[in-house]
Length: 176
Image (cartoon, rainbow, N blue to C red; front, side):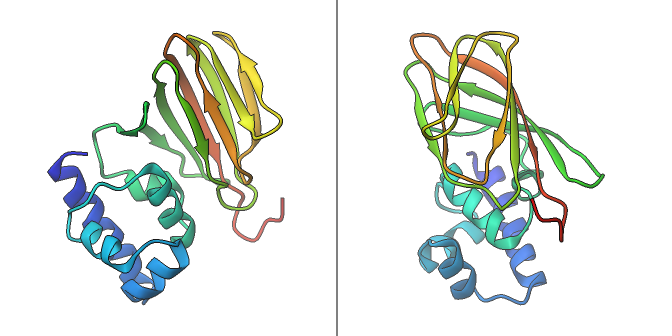
C-alpha cells in the first residue's frame, strides 16, 4: 500500500474509533492486534495485512468496504489483490470487489461478521473456494455463494484467477 493510501486508511480508522469513543487499547485488544501496530496504522505507517483490516472492520462493526473505501489502489498480500468497486446503500449492505489470485496461491480467510455471505464469479483461471472443509472448484463463468461467517479459503493452481466478489452483510438486528 502506498503512503497516501496508508495515511488515508489511518485517518479513516482513527475517525471511526473516536466516533465510538474507544481508546487505542480497547480497539487493539478486541481486534487481537498490538496497540503499537494500531497506533502506527492510525499514523499512516506500517503494512497492514488483509486479515488485520478485516479484524478491525469486524470490531468497528463496519463493512470491510467502508473501512477501505477511501483507498484507490488494490490492497494485497501473499498473491491476493482486492479492490473495492462499489458499496450498496441499501439494506442489507452489499459490497462489490475485483479480486486477483496469483498462481499457486492458498489464502485462508478468517470468519467475517455473523450472517455475512460471499458470492464469487470466476472470470478467468481456476479457483477452489468456500468454507474450509466444504470447498467448490470453479471454472470461468461459475458462481459460488457461501456463508463467510466461518473460516474459508481461496486456492489457485498453475494460472491466476480473476473474479468478482460480492459480500453481503446481515442487516443490523437480523439473525441469520
